[in-house]
Length: 190
Length: 80
Image (cartoon, rainbow over all chains, first blue to last red; front, side, top):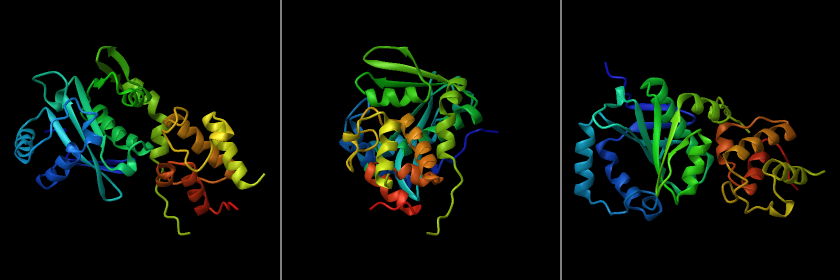
């Protein structure tokens, strides 16, 4: 039985597996220069390319793609991919997560940590991967700093920096942040 | 000390910045000192200083000094 889940929730956010009705929203976000600038390629994506991508990921057991929801609004996208070729996500030794916040109200906000924590918990606790790997442009210092806060360590330093995170470092670096973003919701009547 | 002075003081101490840097335009991630770690310290000190416990939504929404005043007002902290 597969360990893969199509919906994750926690830390006030929800991740839902990308469905066909999400495609235009995702394409609009991905073609937004504010989002595209942090991607490895900035090419504009056509409707046909987006559709072909969707057909491919539906059959691909090495990756999962989600839309990030906060307060019942879609605010960004997240994905995970088996890092080593030929491995499936549910048996991957290492997983490469990716994420962007498209809604400008929440860019540069502590909320960005919520979907990251949710995704990382899923990778370590459910999929039982050994490590997470990220490849970040050396010029993207904000992303590097963000990942260092999560406990990532540099593996390879070049124009593209490869960083890696194991479960122990992750737990150690994020305990306080998790507690902060995981408080029970109170309904303030004032 | 007024509540506004107390709030400024918490920002200065939590973020390790000069009082002159604390104004309504001061935003999360707009200066290197206000990162996620400092944000956690800021929240802890705000709660201690004003004797309250913030909801997670308010912790997320507290993305500027101006926003901090608006959120604390919901917890009956009065700024004059």
